[in-house]
Image (cartoon, rainbow, N blue to C red; front, side):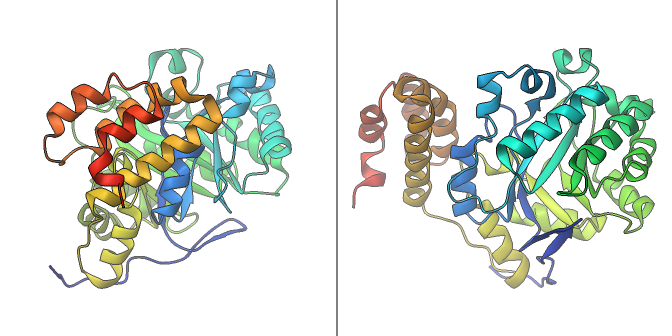
Length: 334
């Protein structure tokens, strides 16, 4: 199927960083590790973000936290997202990220709605306390000394009565950030309800091209990506849950934005990507931890397959690579 379509897929510059396109893998806690980012790069992602990294834990030399910084083998460019509510600690963490990981960008999480993150003064608490958001952003910008760009991801506000996206955005721009991402849900919404894309349109008008604006939230298909770009005039799109089980959504979307033609990868290609993800994760964590982690991911990969319901009941008990190979033998055999 073809539709009339403008060329909405394009190269992008964030500060001093040049990217080949405007379709990104969002930072997803507990999901966007180096294994998943690897298959998303293979699937056409133009840029990828780590899951959020605790500034406090990083400064305390947590080995587990430092492992989140690992760059995937095929990541020529990637971003590390950090979170925290203390400007001094965030600055120290940014310096450590530069020293240990050498990413092309650092992103600040000012959107996570999880209570334990908010209690530390991080995540969505920063969107509410935009004066602190300014101080945190400025501290990180100064810590990297212009070597790489610093960006910020925010929410629309604390709740429907406290929409602070405009004040937060101004704080971010004033502090020297090179781009801003808006997930247009409030902290109170969490991940429920609908993302209010009209706020993205208002944000792009407010920012007025001073820095790039990226969209996040409820983007599960190439058609949704096209709609959000056209409706809001954002510069780029972040896929989060939309990439789970289909890391090829990036290539599918870039093709659609350029041609108007909808293409989809075969189940065999998707399952083989999952097996590659498992292989990388085993190398990082060991077989049993990796297989346990991949249970939820293979549940996503298996959606739409024949007998998928029965298949998922077996997936959640898989403990070895062989278990997964047996489960998906019809899809991975040559």
